[in-house]
Image 1: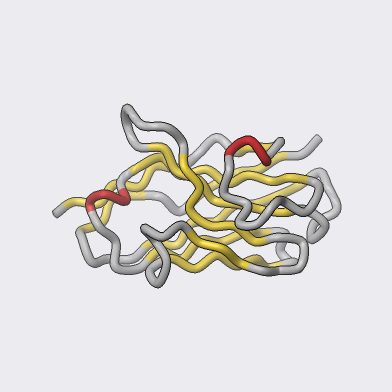
Image 2 (image 1 turned 30 degrees about the vertical axis):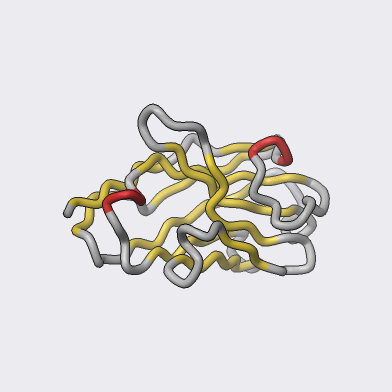
Length: 125
């Protein structure tokens, strides 16, 4: 049973930083493509960043240069470092996993089978 548990969300002022974590269990870590997604109130879920089975990383245009996705294989944990946060980054953030290499850039919700419960990020101006 694949389980994904996000943490690290919270409230921050614009320009601040947060680091989200996603603890993974139930599968052979490193053989999955992983992604971070977000869903703002009243909007569709959208891809933020992904890392594929070759450890290539991809970012949505809206966060490129501000967010960094990474993973620690020893800890079975996926991270999202978010810097220079803006009010429009406010959303519920989800991590996702897929047991195959996703199609570049791996930012489509339809490509992922497993999802966490989410962690809320609120950025005030």
